[in-house]
Structures are given as C-alpha cells and as structure tokens.
Image (tube, rainbow, N blue to C red; front, top):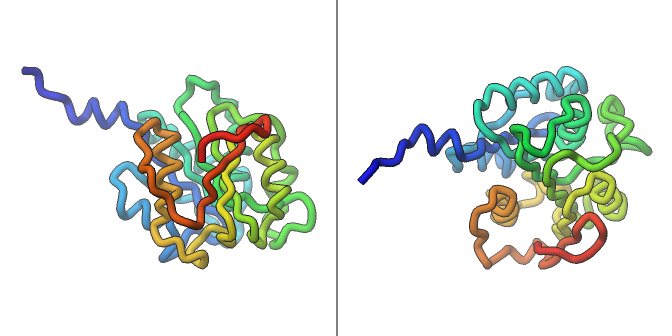
Amino acid sequence: MARSNPHLAEAQNPLVLLVPGLDGSGPGHWQRRWAEEMDDCRLVDLGQWATPHRNTWINRLNLAVHRAGRPVVLVAHSLGCLLTAWWAKFEQPSLSAQVKGALLVAPPEVDFFPRDDRLTGFSPTPDGPLPFPTILVASRNDPWIGFDTAKLLARRWGSRFVDAGNAGHINADSGLGSWDDGKHLLADLLGRPVAAATRDGMRHRSETPDGLEGRP
C-alpha cells in the first residue's frame, strides 16, 4: 500500500494568510488566536501598523502570497479588507490564480467621514467584483461602518454577505474568543465540512451577491 506524502499534502492544502487592519491584531484578537491554534494559518506582517501606507501594504501582502509556495486563502479584518481589494485590483489575479478565496470581516468606511483619518489613504474603495470567491461579514452595530453600507459593499465586490448580528467591530472587544463562526465560514471557503452548530451571535442567513438568500 502506497504511503501518502506529507509534503505533497501540505502543498495541496491552502495556506491561510491572516491580514490584520489598523494597529494590527493584538492579544485576544481572533486572528491572533487562529494563528496560534491552527497549523495552516499565518499572520501577515504588514509593518507600519500605526501609520499604514497603502502601496507598502500591497507590496508586503503580495510578497506573503508569493512566498507561500502553494494556494492561499486570505482572511482579512477591518482595513485588511480594503488592502485585499486594492491588492486584487493591482495584481489582477485570475480565478485560477494562487488566491482561492477571501473571508472579509468588518471592512471600515474609508470614503465618507471615516472614523479615523489614517483610513483615507485607502480611499476610494475599489469597485467591481473581486476575482476570487469572497464572503463579507458585517456587524449591525459596527462603529466603523453602517450595516447598509457594508451590504452595499458586498454587492459591489460580488461577495456573499453574512450578518453577524450585534458584534461591534468583530474584534477582541467583541468577546468572540476564537470566533468559531468565523472558522465555519473559513471551512466553507476551503471546501471542508462545516459543523452544524453555530454561536447565537451569527445570524442563520446570508445573501448572495444578487441579494438572494444563501447559506450562512
């Protein structure tokens, strides 16, 4: 009986690149927990966390994707979502390219009265569908973006929209721990079985880009 090659299996499994936002993902943030708990998750070091520079961040994300040496799935939070969209716009990866999908969590408003002036360097928001499958998760009481604006952004990017309920900015302050619902959505992107149980904070509905209800 032939033995499986662990190196080949690793090369075939996507690497999950965690893309933080403004000020990075500090202790207690679900992104940092995922990096600690899951073997195939890596935090992308974008540098300049307090003073983000769009093109510098694009170059650093591009380097991380190419250094992976295998397919990747991006998991972005906050300003990292805008970075992912800008990276896709400049790099223009095709559907068969190295990035197989992206989970976009709590993107902020950067065009009209952003909460922090440091976000303006990422405006205007890139328009048009992203060139890989995406899920956009938004909270109903996120202080960084209005819920309806987030739904509109999901339509503009061609993302499946997921309603996270009242979860603030979906960060460490939201008390999500390792954010099991997010892990289920990631498993969905990776094409792996998703556990039936979900936390009460995640609504049991989502919307496809054309507004029709889809799977949560």
